[in-house]
Length: 241
Image (cartoon, rainbow, N blue to C red; front, side, top):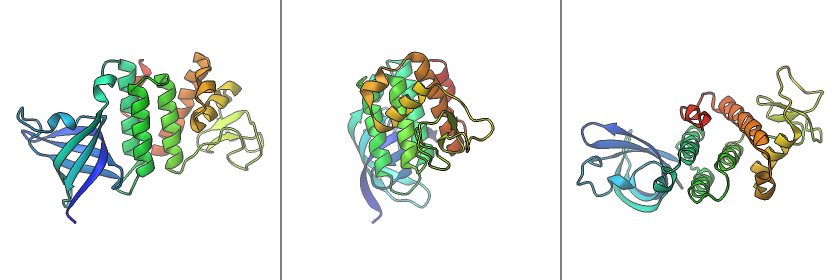
């Protein structure tokens, strides 16, 4: 059918013509969708404010050749008001939605969709420190995309860990025999934190020291950019927090 309905997170928007907007959505059942929202920049628009980045919406779309068309939108949860009041929350959310855009396509991405909702909700409600929420989200989204890192056993040969070296191209920690040139030697506490963030062990993750969190974030960023093969535009904002 040409018309379909789905739950979606608004990843980003940009202007089109005088009053229209192109929105990029991560839907529950149809993967990533780009659609035209006609007239949403007019003050009389019925649903312009509902199609803001970070919003969770119930949307009806009409399938087009290149771009779909937004027909109806119901707001399920607006995370933007809570996120925009805090610079760190906003920048973390910006990295999350940009990463989601890079890690999904037109194929069904239900798990990525649900993970993104959980991450935005955790940021907006301040459930955990923002830096930890972001790094946990990035590690899990990479795992769903098929690039699950190893932080205990050797990512190359499977030798039982723990191991002391980390190499992004190898897929995580590596043993001494597999250690390639240029591998990092992070603090053992950093590798424990990364494992906790990947598995959702929040009590131990929140007990980590600031320097350990900073080192972990650097490794997560390097691992993400290696696999998406580009530098996310929102990362420089995050680095100034």
